[in-house]
Length: 419
Image (cartoon, rainbow, N blue to C red):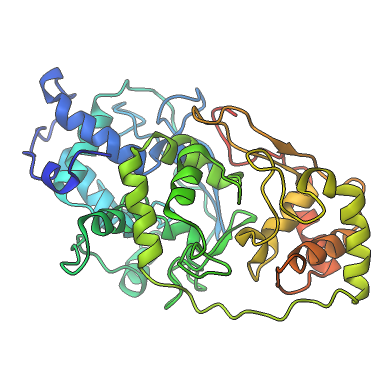
């Protein structure tokens, strides 16, 4: 992202007066650093406007408590943040409080952005101020009662939010610490990859161990060898983040947005830092289940469906086609205790995200039209328990629930502004 992030944070701040004047050309260095932080934070992935190129917001973000409209963060005076000062912006970013005292919902990841410094938020502010102002009014009151009572966030923050800037670990390498800052701070990986408690806060003791996300499942990204990234090499993680795929997996759904707008545009040094941190920070304690026996009727039925429907692309041994179709053997998405990912892909289909490095976007067609709920469950169970895989069997009721969840939903839900 930058030659030396920790050196870069020593750049001067206070570039803007409270009037919020636009960035001047001689502030290019600060604006560029803000752009890099904005890319790491995937601002475009959430705030992309109807024009497909600006940060003017407007689409609805799905949460367990209702849909939240994403705000306009261009420097438009009436509908964006044009009247905000740098101090206003910093308070929103790191405390979750907008001008006028309005508490923001944690769907905006201020709980992670708090790890950034004032210098960091000033740089992002400089970048946003340098963008074209786009008028796009957004309704910011879309949640149903009682979740629309923003003052309730005071109590939520007391229970679920611990403010404080990132502090590097003196016992770790500079690369590890940079990765830790990126993952826990601007990139806010935990927002998707950490399970939630009943209030929508992080589930205690399960950081980065996987979580439900808009009808998808963001997998465990700890160093667990079976369901996490423990068996992935640094190079494999970097390739996935930079290009959107590797021999193990291909990004689709919400992760496709992250790759498209964020990680594919980050320097390889930062991706290596992220990979280093994820590999070294520790592993989850996810138990290893016993595989469903090959003699089980569900496995026999699933094997027949697989041979007829899946083997042509993913091979009879589950190894896939390197560089085109990911392997299914030892595939961490498939091995999660929650079968959401495999059910969604089987029922709805999927298409890999396109990036500059890999512009081709291999796709898998929907099989929901030709398989009933029991057949979907059987083939999912077979895939999750073959070629050395082991994961809980999938039920017809789970397949039915996912079918109802995806009925009428486009394959590319969650990928906005292209691809």
